[in-house]
Length: 135
Picture 1 (cartoon, rainbow, N blue to C red):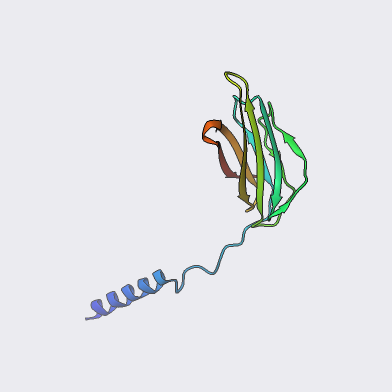
Picture 2: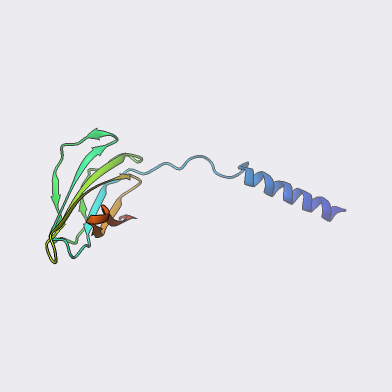
């Protein structure tokens, strides 16, 4: 009888845990940080990045020339966690054929973030990148 009661208590406790009674203590806060961009696309003849907007507000900022560079470059100042940043990527290659593309992507600040440019498919309208924690 005690075994059945103990099993019932354990099942009830597990059920309440699944419902959230005793789980998370609330939403996680996002950390402040910068966004860095790194060019790993070896076929690029021209790579330029600039910030279009931060939290919907247009930014008239610096253009960063990453042509021939493979080191991470900071493209924002330190921003509050949760800030939404739109970056514009201009990538061109003239190695085998003349191709160029302009891409805009939104990123959310949660600590320092590294955006690695890996490849581009102009005809498909996409840039291949990976987004990583940095530092």
